[in-house]
Amino acid sequence: MKKYSRITGTGSFLPPRRMSNSDMVDALQARGVETSDEWIVDRTGIRARHFVDDGVFSSDLGVEACKRALESAGRTAKEIDLIIVATSTPDMVFPSTACILQNKLGANGGAAFDVQAVCSGFIYALTIADAMIRTGAAQRALVVGAEVFSRILDFDDRTTCVLFGDGAGAVVLEASSTPGILSSDLHADGKHVDILCVPGHVAGGAILGDPLLKMDGQAVFKLAVGVLEEAALAVLDKAHRTAADIDWMIPHQANIRIIQSTARKLKVPMAKVVVTVDQHGNTSAASIPLALDTAVRSGKVKLGQTLLLEGVGGGFTWGAVLLNL
Ligand code: UT7
Image (tube, rainbow, N blue to C red; front, top):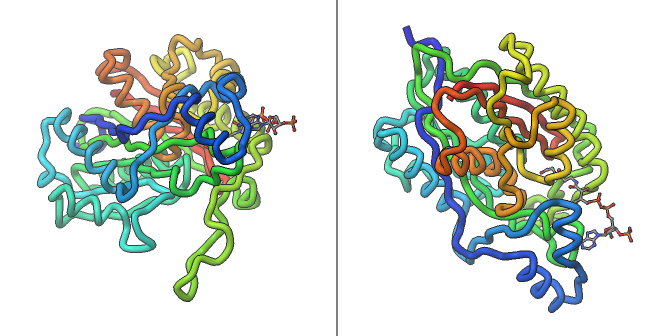
């Protein structure tokens, strides 16, 4: 009997326009905004990020990631009966980016919807897809994180614009008789809405309020370190495992210092931590599936290994998933 769900393929896609720190320094200097490669690397570990060109949307990045995930799973789009897209930068107010992506992919007919949990979005989406597969509501899902954060950055605010990038990652999650997803743990605390938000909204044909990203970096940093440890311990406990059982930790890629601090608290050596923040920046909901696919394709992460995925972001939201690949 197929009572579990398992990842059977991974894929990712980065838009071709790569912006190194020195490209960012030049672009910002032209606007009178001072920053440096040294500050960005010291404080965040970021060396480069990718940005989309005009006219490219989250669904475009997501479609490419999905094609690669389907190919690696040996599946076709027609075999997919559920698509969940985690994004905070949807193509439109509605319909969902998942519906737009479904049509571009030619996977029409199954369920498709978006999940909005900012940088924790992929962890939320994976948990929902796992639950739907285990209850028999779906058999074969594409779980996607896709973002074009460059569209919501304030390039006059050096405290945020150097941190984020664009990209997409996807997994194929299928019903299985052996466990892939072992446990998950999701949380939110809405009293922290203001520390990371894009406060604008659409009304009467205009944008009211500010449609650009605002972040109290230090408040986010402090909260992130605490809750990531809690979520990691919760999924280990639920699955009756310990940190020593983790082959790879694949955290949300926001800041190398947050990643190092969480790994230290859990006593997971950095040699077992997948790091892509240096090359991708923070791609919000896309960061975990992008890091997972990068690690799978480089040969680091292998079939049968135990992975701890964990994310934290606006809302405030956080969560973790423990799985066997
Ligand atoms: O994905 C969701 C989760 N998001 C995160 O996890 C982000 C969490 N927060 C962080 O990663 C860090 O707080 C930041 C990287 C955002 C900031 O690092 P920090 O060590 O907390 O720096 P800070 O905000 O305390 O700023 C230190 C100094 C300030 O100057 P003064 O006031 O000390 O003179 C800033 O104005 O660094 C200055 N600064 C910069 N300098 C050069 C801020 N941004 C820049 C910049 N270039 N881009």
